[in-house]
Length: 471
Image 1: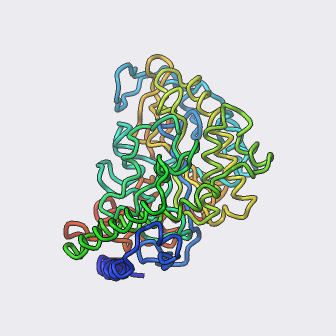
Image 2: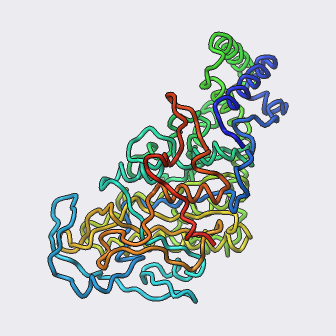
Image 3: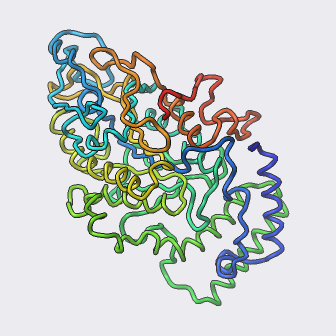
């Protein structure tokens, strides 16, 4: 299917004409079903090729999980511990002395994948996992690296991966956004909402925050109840103002997006609360995600909500880690051992619970689960026991969606400092995820300032589909 500005613009104009003729506000549209027609911007879209997967859950591990302490064992680093090595450092307090991992590894599953003993639950699923040990990024600062993980480049202002997926595939559930973000209700991780922006794509493709506490959808219900007659008058006035604006600016995409958002909000008033009510989940399922343990309950709840959303047709769900005791919890500058122990206790079981639950329900084959931080750590010590940021190497975990199970791809050098064999850049990862969704990363385009923009910008990045990762 060709995706270009002409197709979208023509569909948008027809949509506006229909809305103008109806003269209705969003509340009545929802109640009378006049908005039941699927629009080009939100309707399910045909991918370029037969997809292996139809949805993505992105588990963002903000802070930079340490590859050589968790997922990429380095015996040579242990042997050479204390020796001098020159590396690219980022913060103060770094030595030039190599530091052996203070954590233990073991082989898991029939595949024998080596992973840290701090990740026993993910390790128990080793035969479902694809470890990409040769990832690399382009910046050592959290914000730039997180922006790259989400958009493909270090500069803000570009659409996020979830926005591109929503744009390319549309939604399978017209009562929910195609792209949903689940963060810790206690606060934001590094860079906050910057990570799920729509960039130059229409605003309907921006990530929508859904809360795991209280009312799931923020600002959906009015703080003070409004009498039906008064609301009717407000909606009629809004419809008239929208129509007047449409006449003056017939190609203003923001108005169309605003109208669609009103319609979606009305439908969500009826559907979202029931969908995200977890009280009917079995005790067994709740335990699978760690909801019976205060240490894992918060993150586990978001992972369980992600499964329910995917199960109900949401295309892309982004889950963020806890914000306490710090808002970038994998950032182990002070003590590699104790800081990793703390965050693994919170995230290991729920992450594994999600993969296991998707598999049990027959959803894993059609869902890509991505577990990744924004970069890795250095092989030298910082502050005696910690490790600094390292853009040159990190490990990502993929599960489901046609990725090769029980497989470790690529390699870092002998001390884990730099991706050395079968290197995979972030744009390569994005191209491969789009490929599994049936989308060609070079053909999924959007016109912006005279250019047909893409997620991967492969003319510059030379991004490619990493077929070696695929089953």
